[in-house]
Picture 1: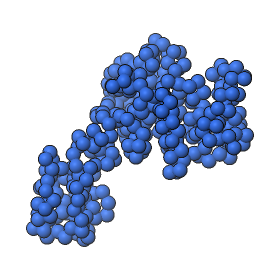
Picture 2 (picture 1 turned 30 degrees about the vertical axis):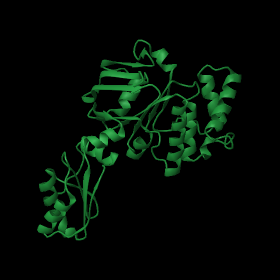
Picture 3 (picture 1 turned 90 degrees about the vertical axis):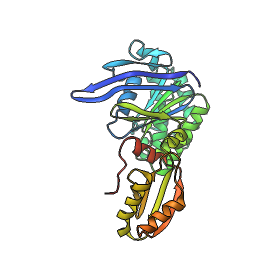
Picture 4 (picture 1 turned 60 degrees about the vertical axis):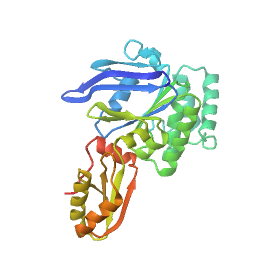
Length: 314
């Protein structure tokens, strides 16, 4: 495994009586995408703000690109980029004007700022709209421009805090493509997201955060394997849901979750089950099943299971 370029050890942070972080540990290998997943209020954004030197931890340590985020904040800032949940660009300026302005704010010379703006406009497919005011940009275009501003200095580490919030599928896909290109060029990306498909598509490793701590880490496949396969049962008659749920609880040892109209899903115990045996038990209970199948869990199900938010049938 590559040496970690982002390391957090025992981070704590409170806001009044609210404990946002409760000993968060994180390690991100160089040249990878780390997806940080968690429900609202889990501490994802607080962790990013500390790593990006925008907030100080109450306790714990963190290093980014070999530099301590407290003692060497300036060195850290020179090596990172940050794109938040909302595009931080000036709607009254053109796309080109925004990038030139950010270049000058980063202390580039006028010539260098103009050259870098043109490079980024081309890279993110914004040349045709470069001289239009950002107020007329689509949501996806604004997010691409925002991402471009975070890359003015070619950062070693890019923090993306829910970068595709509110975008349509096309806009989300454009950001995904841009992230893949950045990583191919050697940038390390730490991505917080609530879109499980996004993490599954982009992340080399995933850290699941809940109540201010990392509760699970691994590749998407490792996390899926850790909770076991799923058994799905579809019933044609809604009245059969309760008896079907009782059968699944008996054979799997845990209560199933409702995952769609007439559809139940349950995690299987180690060693799995034979479908024929499940079908026999359903028949004995008088349940007519329209479909019975085994499958790997989705990352959504991993997330819900790990955070205790999977809703059982009652």
